Length: 122
Image 1 (tube, helix red, strand yellow):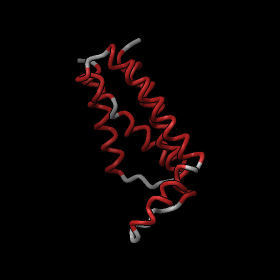
Image 2: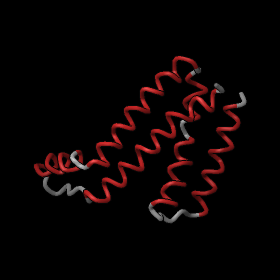
Image 3: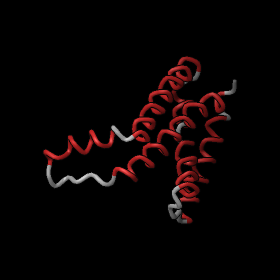
Image 4: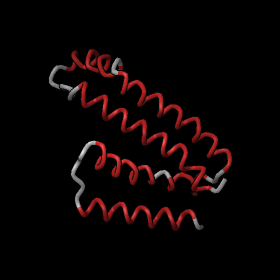
């Protein structure tokens, strides 16, 4: 399997984890930091949300696949390719959560894609 394709697996699993975390936190609500003693119950409530729990499970799964990547690919090549996650999260945020995306963000994504292309060809 080519390097970029191999790195894409944990990246996409991590993106799914990020989407699940966001979906869960939309239903949990914002954390209130005014009462520090109230943080633990807020975290417990968040972790009991099935989407948040699944989001962390996907992050763990992504880490397992990342270990496979690191056993086969130079870190200096593999790690920059993780930035593809920014591209996919931006697209998912725009499509799934209807988040506004400015022209500057789209340009930033284009720069990331150019950088990933350069790294993957080196």
